[in-house]
Image (cartoon, rainbow, N blue to C red):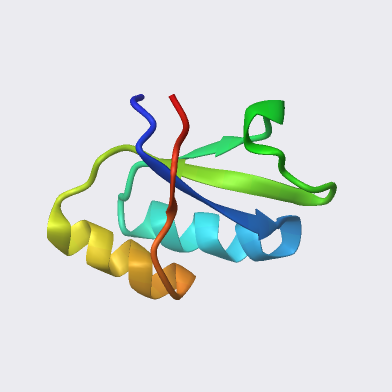
Length: 71
């Protein structure tokens, strides 16, 4: 999967978000990497490029724009 943008969330938040994303068939990956400097007890939910309507749903779920995934 290409990696376009991501959100960093706590593990407890990730549980509910993963369920919601899966229910809506939105593609994502859970990632923990030093490349993103993720704090302990948190994880990145990473997305590929999404159609505008799908991105709007993701943006609404997370309460804002995601961060660009570094090359």
